[in-house]
Image (cartoon, helix red, strand yellow):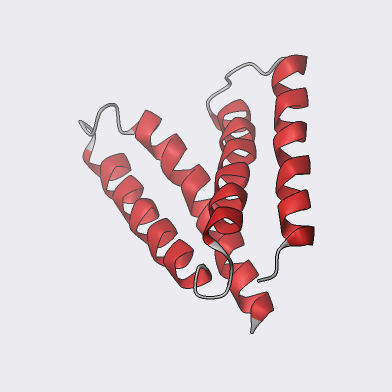
Length: 109
């Protein structure tokens, strides 16, 4: 059961990354298709996050969700939006992910 909560949290983070990119592509919600897809990604992310919190402490779940979102949005923006990434950004994301891993390892949920 605990593995399911972590899988839900992982998927919530993936959808969080997707909605971050979608916000950019929706151009202030002026483009209908990206806006709709972004709204769906937001709803799915929130749903999966809320379900994951049934078995994972709030602080841990939120930090992991944000960490996945940061790493995912940085990667997706580089791959699909051709936004540049510098070494300091990579180091910063690595530190965030290290902190997320620490929370995961020490979590009681």
